Length: 398
Picture 1 (tube, rainbow, N blue to C red):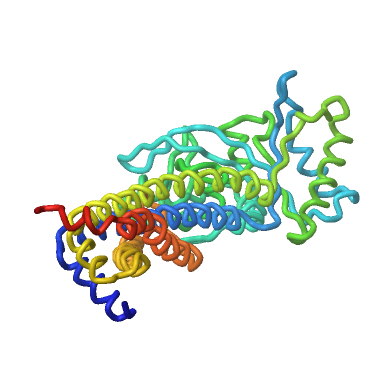
Picture 2: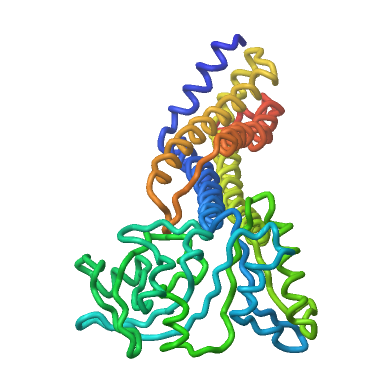
């Protein structure tokens, strides 16, 4: 049988029971679309995390009090920040910003919200590449004027001033009035460090004097002279702190993290998430493949007499098998193509807050899998049809 005849016979077989063929295609669409969409969600989540880490500043180093099995590590003091900033050993360090923090309620007009107040310096905003949505960041001169100013993150500004216009307004934190001079852009770098809650920032001297007291620091944010010097800066910071805390220099004395460490730590979680999503999608694709096998077996059974007539007229087993293979592959290719289109439509909008990221390799993989489904899952029905005894086949239905 010529190739054109095989294609024609396969087309007639597909359109002969259009409803069944359409349902088979739908199963493939769901499987292929699920593979692309779920993998795209995993890629989007990884990209979102990497973008947030990059926004923290490629040269930013965070130092916080450590903790080990033997108990808390050494306490950070304001003198530690001065020592790191001025030490000749720390030649790879460009700037240091100490932080203190406390959970407080803030009041603006008739609105009151719980938030984290962070006392820090102007260097903090430059180290973390903070992006201002309105107004300005803290400046060194703010401390000279009493430090009664604050910068709000986007969530705090929306909660306290839903109508906008936060700049110039006064926020009462505890019993301390602070004038708003700036609002961070949504998802700003500084906000990422202190979590997803509401956070406001004020000069550290003012916060220590009227809110947190003069105890230990919450953290130090250290800026390296360049991204390439981050690891060297980490070693230098450890050396300076070891000299200042000789009795607390164990492994748990201080926790020091960099964007690269965060990226590596989260990379494993992202890989696990991608694997889980791909596994779920693969199950959907497998179900679609089993559906193809089931439909093709039913088709072979319904067309047993037709197969017997064709074999009695001299059709070779290869031609019989080729026809059913073409039918199964055609259904899979059509379903795969529509699945790719459906995935592109679904992923145009964020899914659960994550913008999906479709990669060409994923589309090619899904397209290859759809063809593979037709070949692999259509083989058994095709072989079964080709091996059918023409005499028995002709007796079916008689």
